[in-house]
Image (cartoon, rainbow, N blue to C red; front, side):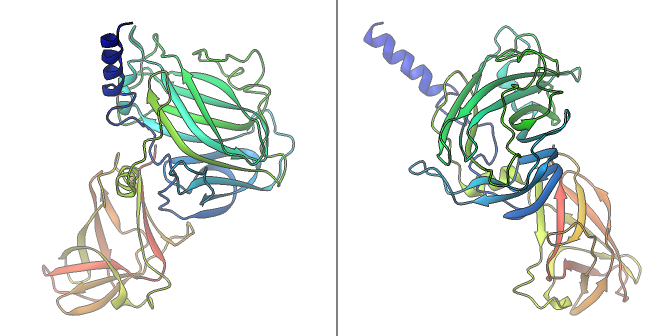
Length: 385
C-alpha cells in the first residue's frame, strides 16, 4: 500500500464511527450515574436497578448487594464501577435459574447496524471486569426483529486472574438475515451471564453464531458466581460500537450521562437530613389552579422528556411503600396538606397532571403551587425498557 493510500485509509478510520463522533451506544457504561441509590441489599429475584441503565436480573441465584463502587482499574480515567456482592449462596442452580447483568437498548438507536441487509455491520463490545471467581463467562447480544422474533449470538470470555482488573473485547458479526425493530421499544440486549441452569446450556453451544434457539445459548462451562458468599464482581467501561475493533472508552460528562439516563428514569426527592419535614419545607414541584375550594390541578414537568409515558409512584425513600405528605399553597397561605398517595390522573411522556384533594379550602380559580414535604419522600418516574 502506498503512503497516500495509508493516509487515506487512516482518514477513513478516523472519520467513521470507529473513532470519530459518538461511538458508545451503551448509556452510563462508566457507572457514574446512580439516581435511585448507591447501594441496595437483599436482591434475590427480578429486575434490579441501582446504577442507571444496567440491571441485575436473577431467578433463584442467591442473594446479593448491588452498589456503586470506587474500585476501578488504574490509569483508565474511571471513577466508579458496578459492584455485585453475594450475601447468600446458591451452590446448585436449577434448570431454569440464572443471574446476569444486562443493558437494554431501544431499537431505533441501533439502526446503524443495518441488520437484515447484506450491509450488516459487525459490533464490538468491550468492558473492564474484576472478580475473585476466575473461569468462563458468556457475553451474549440479542436482537428483536420487526416480527417480534428474538435472535441471539454469544461468545465466551475468561477471567484469568482473581481480584485483578481485565479488559475484554468481543466482536460479533452482523446478522444479515434478521432486522432490528425500529421503535422506542427494546431492540437490542447486551448481557453478561454470571450463571445459569441446564435449560440454556444443554446441546452444542452456538459460539459466535446467530440463532433463535434456547437450549444452547450459554456455554456449559459458564461459572456460577452465586456458589459462595466470598464471590464478588466489578464492572465498568462497558462500551458497544459499530465495527470490528474496540476503541478507547468514550468518557462523557456526568451531565450528559445523567440527561441520557433521565429518558428512562428520574425522581424528585425530599432530604430527610436537611429539613424538618414541615409543610413550609416542601420541595416545590409545580404550579396550578384551584378547581373548587378543596381541589388543586397542576402539572408536573419532568426533568427531561421520557422514552414513553412513565409509571409514577410516590413512596418513602428507599422503599416501595406509598406515601402522601403533600403541601399546597395559594397566595401567602402555606400548608394546605394532602395525603393523596397517587394524585396523578393524566400521564404523558413530557409531563403529568396532578389532581389533589386537600384537607383545607383554597380560593376557587386562584393560582396555587404544590410540593413534596421534605422528609425523605420520593416521586419515582419510570420509563425503563
